[in-house]
Image (tube, rainbow, N blue to C red; front, side, top):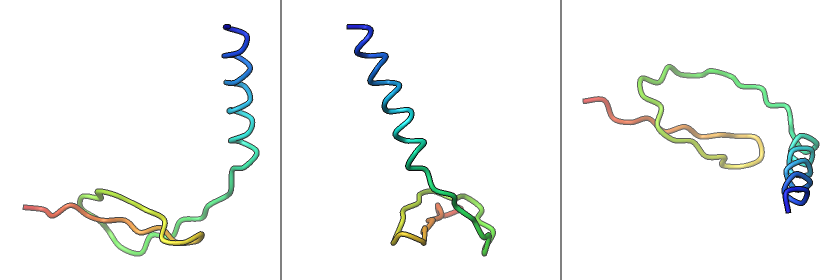
Length: 53
């Protein structure tokens, strides 16, 4: 059983590193309280900000 868990862990580790991509981030605005983020397409990420009271 523990050999199977070890094999699955190693498989997941190597499969995730093989599919990794390089991202370049460009800061376009200063956010006071960044809250959430989501990809809107393959190349763009949108970040929401929590309202400051």
